[in-house]
Amino acid sequence: MAFAEKAYLEITLKVDPKDRAAAGAVYAKYKQPFLTQISGAESKELLIRDDDVQVLHGFASRQQAEAYLSSDLFNKDVVASLKPLLKAAPEVRIYTSN
Picture 1 (cartoon, rainbow, N blue to C red):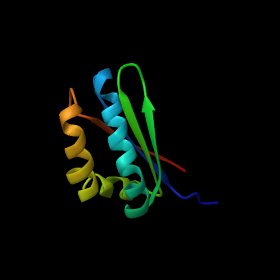
Picture 2 (picture 1 turned 120 degrees about the vertical axis):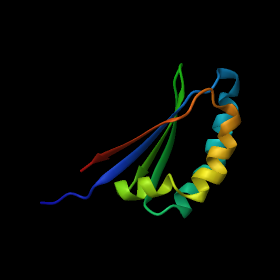
Picture 3 (picture 1 turned 180 degrees about the vertical axis):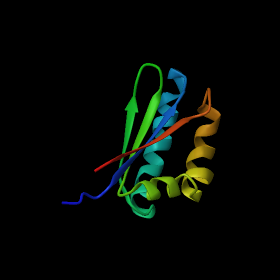
């Protein structure tokens, strides 16, 4: 029995507590375009921790997660909007599961 590969793109953002609402607004603004415009996009969740903010993206495959990182929506919209809020470069990880 073969299982379909799923992928998760985890982006960890170092954002000052005072800027977390603004980071959350960026998440909210681009969640629906992500889900409707990005091939293989299945989910997008915002995780707020004491030290940072994480955005967990679900994809149908690893290749689609990697392609999103090169997309205009990610680079021209999301990254450009978040850049003034970041204290450090984001940590980007891709996980796969079957």
